[in-house]
Length: 289
Image: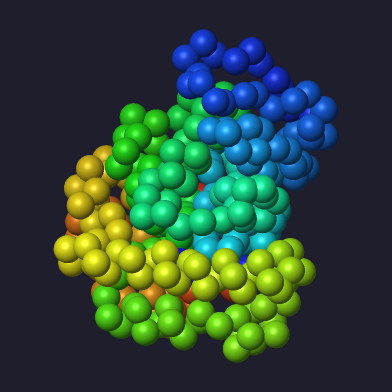
């Protein structure tokens, strides 16, 4: 599923093979790099994408947030506590989310494909030769698409709270979150502070329509046809108390992504990487090493 509720560069010359429409970040757009978390924007595919970066490890890892999420809101414990000698973390805000606005977010039928292309092109713009992916919820779906479409660029992948297709049960869950006025204050307030109520409400409503459009496809497919094309080592994490993503989605991913592993967290819910951050971080770091 898709719901991601949470909370100066070493500039090099652009490589000649960078695609048109991709520009390097401006010097001075972020402060020091290493253990501090810095922020910057860079133009990718015609959009100014916002990202946070920390660490100076050889292994680059892109963190992909969920619906209405951002690096800032969705990955605080990872940006703070991941091993920054081994890893360089980049947490991005997809177009229309977080601080990657304008443009406003929309949900054409290929929005996961678009996000995957933006994510890979962002990391290429930042001069990373290969990357691993940590994808939560919608970000997990985007990670699967990226791994399938760009197999030579992706080293490893960790996903949780993701699904490859939409069922009637999923549709009922999505309809249940359409009206943000019915959300708990704890969930709504941080996102309302980031977006304002009107943008939050409109975007959530449009997201529900956007994700339900996959119901029209054979077997409700979002990306199920791409799963056999994933070549990178993959860890699927599932919280057994996740109220938003039933267990059968994790099982399906594990069954259809060759060589993948499934790790169950008995007390984990949808935000298991936040609620059990220490356990999750160790699990992800050990897998990525």
